[in-house]
Image (cartoon, rainbow, N blue to C red; front, side, top):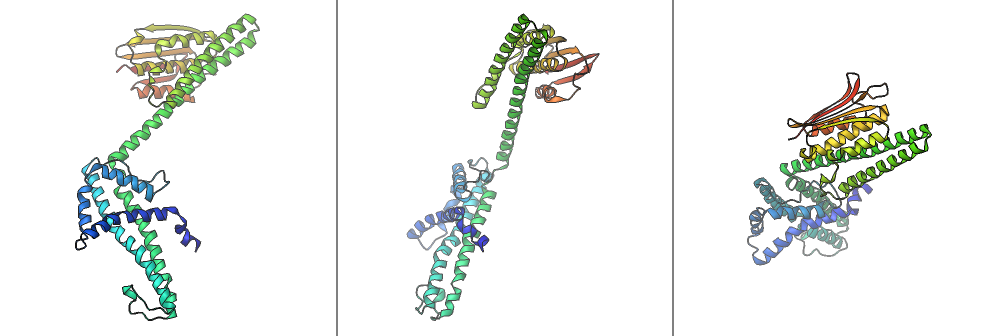
Length: 384
């Protein structure tokens, strides 16, 4: 019984009923003008459905009254973009008016019938209800009082569910809208992954440098070396904070341009940070880094940063050879260091995977792993 009565306790039941009543306002006004042609309002709704903004208005109203509080209502609030959308809107307006008629009459007449049955059961002569004109006063009519109330319940709840289902079908997103939503969702996921890589590369690099410097300072036992190590940790920490603020700025301001991210023109900062950690970096740059397109230069900076971070984290203070070449329509970036047992194998860790993902997003390729006795990170990024 409680489950049967539960719909009567939900506000959605009554907002749906209100949604069904709204078209009858138009019909009621028209009936005051001409009762002989009640079908005219339904005919007038056909050209109204061709107006693009009508679909948006019907969608907003359906969301508010049919699916209040539902984040995924399945009802679009965009204007009609195609003739198919206009046709669905016209059909929706006709179906909505057709369902409004029984809903309105049921809410008026069924309670009156229940009330009249009660009067007859108490000995009153029926009046005003055509279906009860022949009834004679008798107590047995009291047993029939629940019938119109149950019918009213079925009409209110049933038509509310029906009109909601029809709204999802006729006012639901079109194929183009669903495709646009999927593309937007894909862009959001790509942006999340990019931000995760940004944080991993910048913060991971800074922490690796700080850990290596602190360990080297403790092992050296030299105050002068310790001062240099602390200076390097401070400088790396400041750079990491700048990177973190830049990434958080992207999160806070969706329209903020990505051009504020570091590029290969700032690669000297990475090389000096690696040298300050004890690595012997031999860098060679061929070509003009200023001519590299922004997206390629920014991703190349992150690839170089992650490659140097892996060297410091897994190989320590070892000789590192860095080669950056711009020419032939591509950016060629190579980082090599002596291979040892502590160096991770190819494909392990999110950093190496991130390098390959960055290269793939730009239409290039990246290889990570042992090569001729060294550990190699080699990326080729097209400039177009």
